[in-house]
Amino acid sequence: MLVISNSVSIPDNEIELNFVRSQGAGGQNVNKVNTAVHLRFDIQASSLPDFYKEKLLNLRDSRITKDGVIVIKAQTERSQDDNRTQALERLASLIRSVNKVQRKRIATKPTRSSQRKRVDNKTKRGEVKKGRGKIRF
Image (cartoon, rainbow, N blue to C red; front, side, top):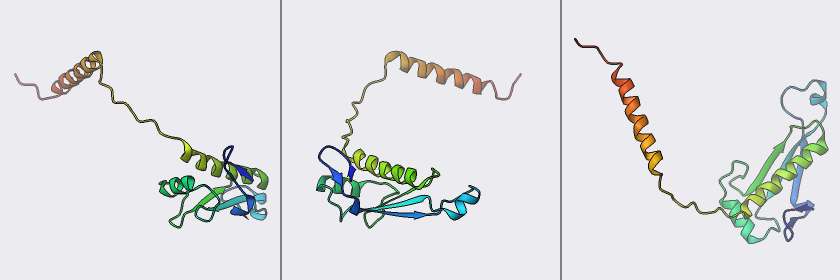
């Protein structure tokens, strides 16, 4: 059971975990032990509330396929159990991120001093560039 919040949790049977060999260098151990984890979670077939499903499917995330399946690969740790824990935590954080409401940005005006500094820097830069031209007698 993966706990997302007080009221939302995902049963283990909805999360598919496959163990494969890790990529990259690692010596003899990497060639014989399946420590990397491929986690697959079908958003449509899950027991998540509709609010979460809708937000997840609208997310522009490379881990979510067109079919609405979240695919996470964890292979940084040397043990299978640590990689499983890491993959499940990444899934939970992805689902939790949907629940956060983004505050709307309030537009502010630049201060008078910042405007003055900007113009001064532009004029100084212009003088430097002018000095690079041909010298005429």
